[in-house]
Every structure is written in structure tokens, then in C-alpha cells.
Picture 1 (cartoon, rainbow, N blue to C red):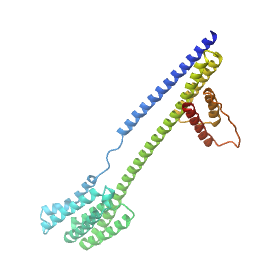
Picture 2 (tube, rainbow, N blue to C red):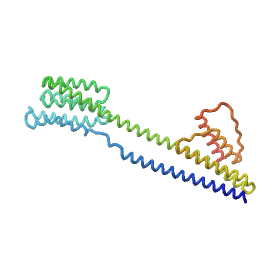
Picture 3 (cartoon, rainbow, N blue to C red):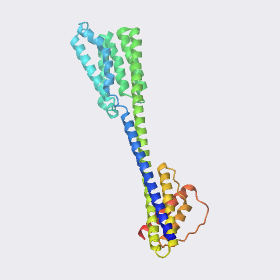
Picture 4 (cartoon, rainbow, N blue to C red):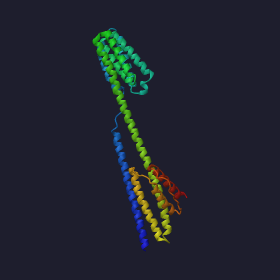
Length: 335
């Protein structure tokens, strides 16, 4: 009767360990749900879409002086001036909107449009002068938006010198210095701002990709650990439970020893699952060999172990521990 009471106590202990494992599993699922809600909040705070050509459209207001001269009739040949103003604005819009797409701003059509803008700006500046010279800074802005690369510095410098020369021919040194400086500044500042914005977005995208890969790696690690831990542990528990059931009618002491082993295996599994959740679990070859001896003996397999050679480094020992665990699990399940 005392042996049966001890058997019942061992079974109750095993059931308590199982309930503890279930509680730990529920806490882990709750932590996962909380992490999912945190990711949703982070997604809600994600910045908006990248800038487009609309960000550069307000600079066309620099051409209001030329447009005012056309309306007031102070521009000779107003139809030619009006057609030139419309064509310049159309080319400017075309270039700036294509400048926010890397493939489009490097295309031949974008470069041709820039050349046409340069020729048109030169013709309008030489033909009318005055307010029409302000088209050179607008041209510099379009060049800075479209030619973000190693050639931008030389191109911007040459364009500013060219704009100063044309302005000198038309209006003297006063216009030449102001227009040349404004052209260089608009091209360089525009390229710097847009290049920085693009670099920040690329870095943010790279950071999000690294975070996504880290989450996937951790998920794979945990699923692998959980599969190996539970597969091996449950197989050992099943084998020892069958052994305890067979031994109980004729050898209660041996049955109690098997149930004690079941309790030990269950508690060790709880500890390993906690370590797997936190990511600090490390395998040990000696520990796995001891467990392998116990599991195989319960399955009526007599293992023979021998040890020789120099001690292994921790990483190799942990890897071989996983090999032993998986091999014993397969033997217990399928042999």
C-alpha cells in the first residue's frame, strides 16, 4: 500500500510539472501578443511617402517677374517670350518629377530635357535679360535634382560660370555675380538635400530589413529549439511511462524509479524551455550523454560509451550535444 501511495505521489508531481509547463507556455504566448501590438504601434509611426516633384514646384514662382513683364507688354515679341516661358516650365516639371526615381533621372530623355532647358534658358536670357536671367538658378535646381552623383560638382561649377558669362553679356558684372552664385548654390543645395533624404530613407529601409531578418532568425531558432526539446523530452517521457506501467504489477520500486526519472525529465524540460525562450540555452555533450543512457536504457537498449581525446571547445560540444539528442530521439521513436 505504501508503494502505491508513493506511485500516486509521483504521478501527482508529474501532473504538477505538466501544469507548470502549460503556465509557462501561456506566458510566452502573452509575450508574443504584446510584441505584436508593439510592432503595430511602430508601423503606425512610420514616416509618410517619399517626396515627389511637387516639392520643387514652388520655385517656379521665381519666373513671376518674366510673366509680369509679358502681361504688361514690356517684353518685345511677347508670343515668343510666352512660348519660351511655357516650354521652360514644362521641361522643368518633366525633369523634376523624373528626378525622384533613380532609373528615370539617369535615362537619356532626362538628360536631353536638361540640355533643351539649357539652350532655352540661354536664348531667353540673351534675348530679354533682366528678370529672364533668373531662369539660370531654376536650371541649376533642375540639374541638382537630376544629376546627383560624382559629376555634379563639376557640372554645377561649369553651369554657374556659364550663367555668369551670359549674365555679364546681358547685364554687366552686377547680374553676373548674383546669377552665377545663385545658380551654383541652387544646384549644390538641392542635390545635397535630396541626396540626404534619399540616403536616410535607404538607411531606414536597411534597418527595417535587418530587424525583420533578426526576428525571422530568432523565430527559426526558437522553433528549432522547441522542436528538439519537446521531441526528445516527450519521447523519453513516453518510453519511461510505458516502462513504469509494465513494471508496476511486479516491481513497484523499479516503477517508482522510472516515475522519478519522468519527474526529473519534466523539470529539466521546463528549465530548458525557459532558456530557449530567453535565448540563453547552451547544450552540453556530457549532459546529453547522461540523458541518452537513461532514455535508451528505459527503451531496453544498452548503450556503450567511451571517452578519449582532448576536451572540445564549447561550440563544438554544444553542436555534438544536439546530434546526440536528435539521434537518441530517433532511436527511441523508430527503433
